[in-house]
Length: 172
Length: 327
Image 1 (cartoon, rainbow over the protein chains, first blue to last red):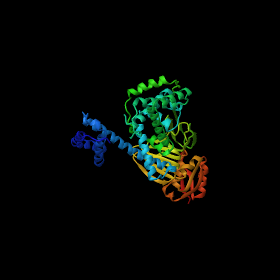
Image 2: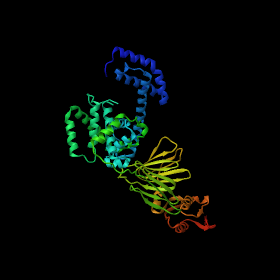
Image 3: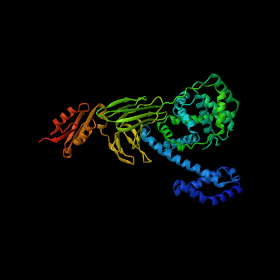
Image 4: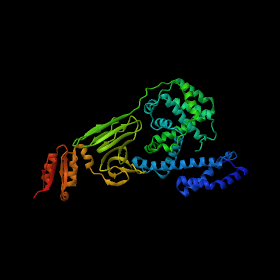
């Protein structure tokens, strides 16, 4: 983490004091859980601290904080979903039953990462990418399935990979 | 998300790398393209770095592709968890670049829709083979609609009973197979199972694999494993984890199986297969039957019942028969 200047530190503290209560209310309303809302308020400000360069130019802190918090809420639901679906999958595929705790944690982390990468894509792009990379279909097969030209599939694939690369490089 | 490399690569390089990725993933990559790609790779260390990242990303997806559980999670993730973003200007530009960079051709536009209706008369059972290899038995007085789309094999059970031995769907790599009744949705994965819809409830018996049950008015779903039976309606699961009854499979072989079955339950089952109706007074329910009875020859079944139990069956009128204790 970058070191904060004295000025930035003061600003974050001020922001925290001013905004934490409405943010907490907003999150509690979204999540219907006080405890969780409190956690995510903290996480929101941690995100802010990770990008100190944005603090100085924060013109609309309310909107900015809401955007971060909104992203965190999405992450939270996504993780809930992935964990639930993974447990279901283990029940459905007995051959993969009972992985060790460690294996399970790694598999879940990878899945969360993949789902987050896919989350940035538009639906047709995501579908094409899943069919290619997860299901191993050729462009021709994908183009039949999605009823678009092979050339479009190629565009989708480039678009999908770019989204992944941008996330990996902390763009976007 | 943490970048794997310290240096952040310029977006321009990422864009070029993505286009090369899309070209090299094509079904037929020309030597010329491969040569050009190698040249691009050697032009700048950043290009190489971006390419390594691509290989890393591919490896991660490949890992998921090798695990049925991971595949399941990704395919089960509904769109709302993939919050979609608005089209970027970049996509538009990319379309132009890719079309300039590559020669490709259009394939004819066709959508893979297959909508069909099947039904059986009273007393009729029918075996249907679907395009994906799935075998489907339709029991007496039943009706279904099937609809196969690019991402779903849907069977709608309007009334009656079906037994499914699901095919692997090699062509499209495991499109989910679902059975919908008014009560909710059943999702199968490589299984043999029976679904019966009557009196506003649906009963599911799983003989192989597993089936997911989601009542239509309930947000959660349960999984029924092989050897288990689940009964549900629109609101909720009524019974769960009962052992399966072989009777729910035997009918596909034209047999009504009675394993210590109360007589009136047996008659109720039998009535499903004929236009006329046999009335069984409740007091006869203490009598029980054992054996397999051919569904295609009901008079023979009735004679067999009269032989094994102290009852006789007589005709009341054109449509109604009655079973009584022999005095």
